[in-house]
Image 1 (tube, one colour):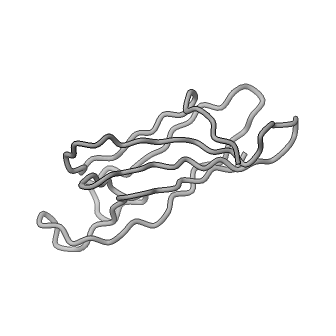
Image 2: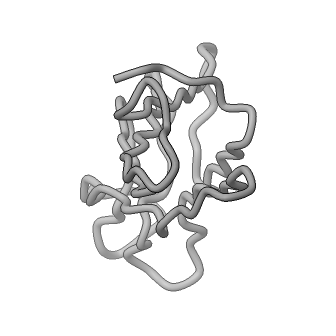
Length: 113
């Protein structure tokens, strides 16, 4: 796999994040080094959420929460599928009666092209 810059990717992280001293990072990795016309590929966006950072999963587990969302603009001639989000970790939080789906650590969001 080849690592590519996030020039045409915008990662919008949902609300509910804890404040931390380390930065959240994201990078994209494509399954091909070169993209021939008509060739299918996979794109993985790898988000690193260092402790104590966390964000809401997608889909959210409770009404009113804002999901983590990956928004992309593909170059002309490239079609992308909707992102496939991993399941979140159910975590008991003080402000909710039921556990809430969250992402922390490494999160991989997949897109087919």
